[in-house]
Image (tube, rainbow over all chains, first blue to last red; front, side):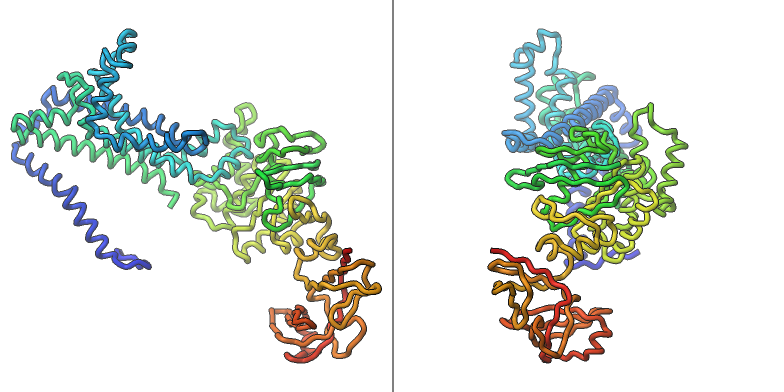
Length: 274
Length: 346
């Protein structure tokens, strides 16, 4: 197998070497340190820490809330991307810029703002409370915070693909007798699906790791609204470095497996387009 | 099915793409819309298809007004310049698309769809590609698949927008002959858009020459080529030498030669390069000049002759005539047009 491909631009060795070095220093090294740290535990105590009921409950909250948030953004993000690409209206550029705001805002600020807004005495929380709906300090609050934080991912991955989509594909489908709905799910959706999946994956991964915004609105009740990153922090605060690294390794492995799965699915779906 | 186009106007902003245009297409005819880019030919095709709505005017299919009918219900097959195949579907599924999206009540059974799709793939001679994806096909193959897809819905009218525009010359020539044969076989009323005059003349039953949103001339290929109705058609169809001259006592003078002209002030004389004879003897209608270049173009020879006022005239001779005449560079010759068209203006 030939590795090096001839190209007009030189520097394959340097570019590849630097990429590998960079990834090693920034990504691989800390992860390796984490895993080696957790090696300080024997298997039995490792298993005891990571299967402790309170920790297991936190996995469910974290992965469950992240999945729901990513799914919500899958639909809402597609809708926003669609509106931004297909229609022109006053204030469009402003809304376009607004989409990136969750990226720019410190997550703690977002968390505090959401908590204030949705607290039982907050601007939106009070009327909702009267209807018997509690958002802040429940798992619903976690989903809300994660939805806010991960909003830009799907929008920003789908938007360029929608923009590049030839109008002729829709016209061809239309001339062949397809209805609007058929055009959407038989032509448009398969075309943007890989991008949708990428956006979903990014949102999901980001949500799993989110800490700052969640802790302010979650209420952090054991077994109910504690997220796994919080478990890690609380172990660290008790100087239980080994325990913290053990939970971190579990998160790492699960996240990696999920990402690998989604990437595999995406590769399989786009295998014919190369 | 016949198509009747009545007084269509279509504007994009300030730009008049179609300016009060009317045209009749007979049932089973293959018509070419020919013109330079921006002449409105694609807009006209899209209006017929229902992909654009005209500002005013009517489109009638077989005498029935379809102006306000959605493209979905017009039963037209549309073939795009860049194929517009569905990349995520196999060739088979692309062709089957129009059958699969039918409402349940009229949708054929899977076996029927399969039979139909293979029949169409055989018609375009690409049945062996049924399981491939569009990305794995060549441009010519893609366009044939696009055509099969359009034919699957049994369209009453087939519309092709520069169908061979994105292909290289050799494939283009093959495909247009193939299209002509296919049309003779299936006989569906077809309109195709092209800017390539050779393509239009070779393939179409009738050619519609368009310019600036209007029709310049409609006729069979030989009619539009041999008797162009306007200076535009003369220039657009084939090479032409063009002389500006003044009319004096019924004669338009070009260099040393003169041509009978209608009364008027200015005259423009059009002469095609292959309709000029060379002579070594001066005569009343001959234009004196000097040969500056001789170039061999396969079966023909192109000579450039400089006449009065440094104007250059192109002359095309067959190989034999060039050998017979043994014309040399720098030689003085007399150009005798066999055919010419003179248009006078006040």
